[in-house]
Image 1 (spheres, rainbow, N blue to C red):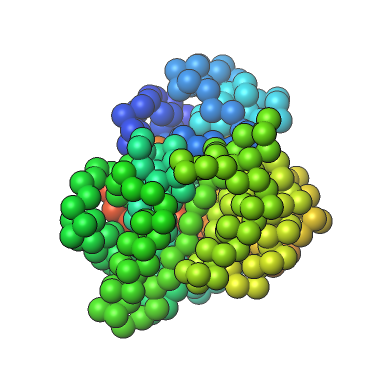
Image 2: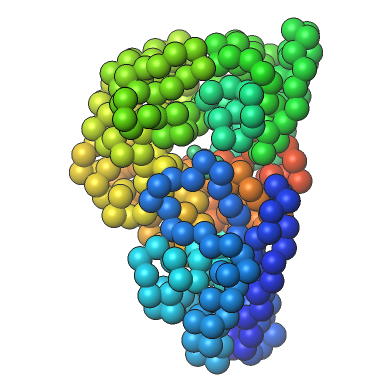
Length: 401
Ligand SMILES: C=C(OP(=O)(O)O)C(=O)O
Ligand SMILES: [Mg+2]
């Protein structure tokens, strides 16, 4: 019944106004799934390859579609994803593009769920999925590669760790976002927004810490539960391999100084989450920082692990980080993302399912997070392509109770 009868691919717009790949998967018994690929700006060196959408679509039509139509079953996700890998024939999806691969993979999952008449999270997670909902990490101030002339640190993320429900958590993050705007206004700091909808003021990181710290405290007091915050440093973007230093607007830090700096920030602001605090090639420095602050905070590898089980295994062996960011398009298929989540959980690493800075209305990651019982999801705080996922989480929670 879930035999794939058609795969349609087209170019659509992402949230940055760039073209992306959208896929429709149709099945024999009338199942339908549609999904679109997101796109990163601060991409990791070891990510699967995103090809220009028109090239990715042409290559997928030539190599993948004929092997799927009339051949593979949308209800069998591992089979669909194995066909995608086989049709591509490379390690990094450089033939059909990880953007075509992930769009087809996610659309097939939705078509499989549609045939069953089950919500996607149920199809992906099965009867024995967990009962928990992820805590959303909401980007409220940012810069780096996501906004010009703003903070060096890419993302300041509200973390409503004490929220009694996913709905309360989502609204708390939006309230922190709004409170940040009030505090900026009080200080006469004009600002626009970055790619993910976070405020992107032209201030230094020290001032951003003050403002976000105050905003989370004010909102926590108002809502009556604990809200902390965390960071995506995206340190690979500021690392200069030649000099071995991290380049900030106000000077450089060598690796030891960077470790010291991050450890001090964790202590000073009780950070609950620190993503990519060090360069993507420096497992040793990640291990050293994890050793120092890993009991107090999540040290998360995004560019470090790129949702890749080989890189995660290396991290586990070396004690680098205690958390992994999961971005399906970094690796190309839902199967690969699932395997990375399972490997993480088996080894005590917290998976954090994540959006990209260039997004679409697609809500697959909300279902993936619930299906796998991931403790966190990072998908912004405001903005249509971000609220698409946040509102889907609220709907899933509503349906599940
Ligand atoms: C979401 C992120 O940004 P991008 O999609 O640009 O990699 C990130 O770095 O975690
Ligand atoms: Mg990141």
